[in-house]
Length: 259
Image (cartoon, rainbow, N blue to C red; front, side):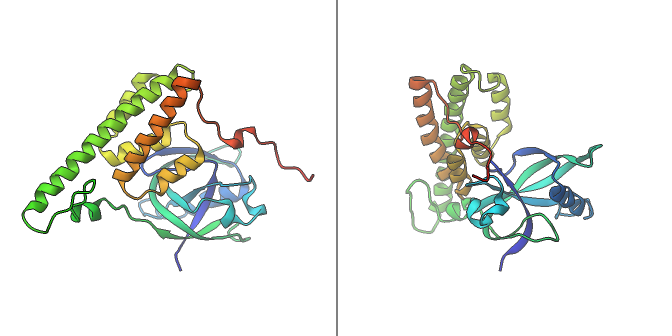
């Protein structure tokens, strides 16, 4: 049995450390907000899980566990502004990653709940094992040197991804699909460690939901950055040769009908 948390399906994944503003208007999620606001403000339970929708639009009309990707991220509520219509404008920040074990649909509460297991990052374990792109050494005084090499190689990888991402944003900007380069430079400076950089790239790049979900599922920053380097090179090739960025299939979908 995992932990039971409120669940909020979205069309795209949420990533740790990434700000997510939402306008809450559906009655069931208004109830969710009221339930969260009833909890202590200085406590740690004012959050809900965000899981990306794999297929369908009305998740409850089909098997919810099959309609959602199995790796999600918590959204911690940081700001709440009640609206005149009874809804809420909220600001959340991505927190911990989790794996969906089951999705529960009920009448009370009316919103979805998820049984989850929490996912840990792997950096500490990799560094403790002296793993750095295949470097292995016997235990002893050399371990500190190996750890230093591992950190150094991570910095080199992060620098390479930051450079690729800056090039990618510049190319996308020429298509009118992104902000100014200066804004991206500020974001890159804010991502002052490799893990923060990896989540920034995953959230800001114009990737398919499948690509984003694969990055969210990766537990090690080193492997996530390596995957982003491959994806960014692929996207740069497409941009430079075709002048195109990916568009989610959902963008071309028509509303569901009874036919």
